[in-house]
Amino acid sequence: MSLDFDTRFEPAYGEAVAIAKGVARLTVNNPSPFTFHGTNSYILGTDTLAVIDPGPDDDAHLEALIRAIAGRPVSHIFVSHTHRDHSPLAARLKGLSLGLATMALTFTGVWLLYSLDDLTGGYNGRNVPALEFGPLSSVGSNIAIGGMQITSQRFVWYAGLIALLLVVLFTHNILGRRIGRALTAVRDADVHAGALGVNIGEVRAITFVISSAFAGLAGVLIAINIQRVVPDYWGLHLSLSYLAMIVIGGMRSIGGATLGALIVTALPSVLQRYGQSIPGVGSEGGDGLSPAVAAQVLYGAFLVLVLLVQPQGLVRLGKDGYQWVKDRLFKNDSKQVASTPAETSR
Image (tube, rainbow, N blue to C red; front, side):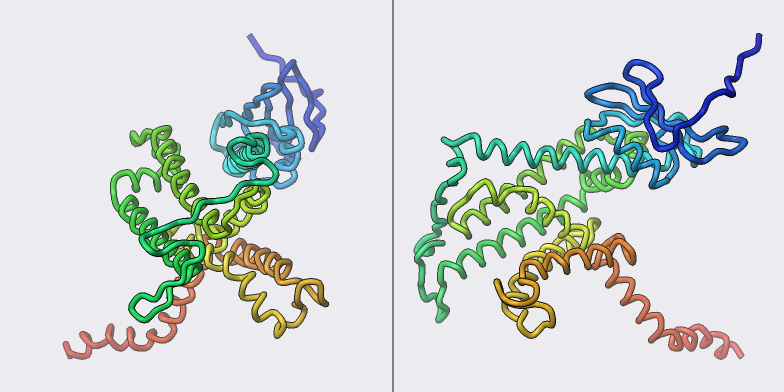
């Protein structure tokens, strides 16, 4: 018995073609004797989607998939085999789906903050009780301790510093234990981690619990500092700021996240204070870019620099630079040390 091979198939590159109810096909523009008219990707479903064989690492095909998905959640990504024309785009599509889900969660959270008037105060927000520790308070405190004046702002600053040190210590301890190794394995290669017996669902649940606790602590400190919370503050801009922190500093180290947070948080204040001496930067309402806008421009420049030069962040870039300088400075010394045994043997 022979199978008929339909050679009348005409691809529509860059477009989703419906071939059955709830099934759409997208063809990559990579015709060859092995791929025929091109590699086919399939989208299954109507509300929640599954993608079969996302395709090669091709920007045009990724854009076509994004248009066809149209913001709908992707619950599964299947790869029939790992050839270069079928599987590489799976990683980028997976990251995009997680990003869309995060944005949707952000908008949903802001809507809830506006809607739950009794709890959040709605559009007007609500006041935050002062943080008190003995005679110290985050509001109206000015006490001399050991010759140092502890004002309310300084007290909040020290409270934030203590919280940061505790979080860094806690995270460092976790990463050195079995759960930390599991977190790293799932982050880098979840399929391989699952094959080695790591419970991926449990590890991800633990990750969400820990990250939620850190986010809650950060939210408390922010609320104490500004003394009033309104839903507008917790919108998309804040989420993008957090994203900029980890990308700029580096996602694979505690120091990278800390450095990124320091840059993103301190840069507007630095520009506000010293912006007058920087060409193109002026005061609010004056000539040139305002400090806030200039800070956003610099965020973008940092992001482009990191993504083009060293995707692992400024911390990794600094380590590479230090290693490069070290190799150049001590290159001759290492050669002399290496030649010493030979000279001694003569």
